[in-house]
Amino acid sequence: MEHVIAKADVLMEALPYLRSFSGKTFVIKFGGSLQETPGGEESFIQDVLFLHTAGIKPIVVHGGGKEISAVQKKLGIETRFVHGLRVTDGRTMKVAASVLGGVNLRMVGRLKKLGAGATGFSGHRGSVVRAKKMVVEGGDLGFVGTPAGFFIDPLKAAQNKSRIPILSSVAVGSKNVLYNVNADDVAGALAARLKAVKLILMTDVPGIQDGEGNLISSLNSGKVLSLIKSGVISRGMIPKVKGCLQALKRGVGKAHIIDGRHRHSLLLEIFTNKGVGTEIVR
Image (cartoon, rainbow, N blue to C red; front, side):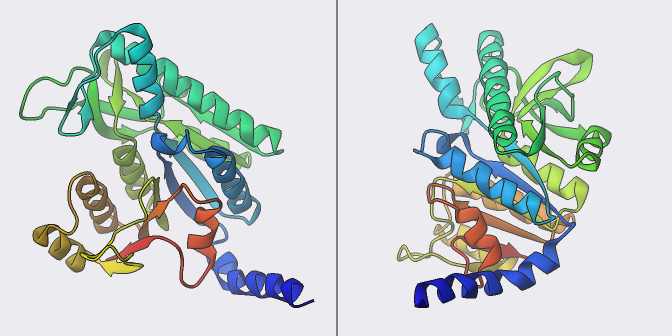
């Protein structure tokens, strides 16, 4: 009997969060590195469905970097990165558009199998994300873009029909040119545009850790900058947290970095008092 009561206690812990977030928008980025985790994508889709059923308005932005690299290898296309960004020539852009379009259709299909309405947006299909060419020091990255704006009406239309929008990070630029855009950047910019209550980055690390490897469950922007300066936050985590800070500055309520390799980590972060990742506040 005690284990049954414990389940009720979990539901009661979630109740104030369910009431507080009903009708609110969450922008959730699901990293391509998680798509190879056994059961990871399926667990994530179940969590998104739970949010939707609870009256929350989730919008999913996904990547697909590992799948793109795998196809490049099969085709004999060299994979190169500059500042952590994939150098995207014409052939690589075609691969990225094809792979991410396939991931998008797969995620929409998973939701539909669970009985949820979903609408996919990828590249020219829906043309929700607008992009411009990214310019960086160290050379031309090719068809790598940065978010330049959004067509919000198609997203709103999907939500009005109780459909969950699923966006890939392939965006459309001037003259209808496709660009490969970092999914973290798309999610952060979209969350800021919508003034989302939460920006959630699902990744393959435990969140932000201190100098001794302990998870930091909550910190503010000042502490984040201090940890970057001291070198505790380093390498690939720096652009993620800077993107979170920019989103917070532009009106997003909270940002979260969560280890998506654990089943239902999204629900555990949102609906429990302690959470399982790192939340960043203003």
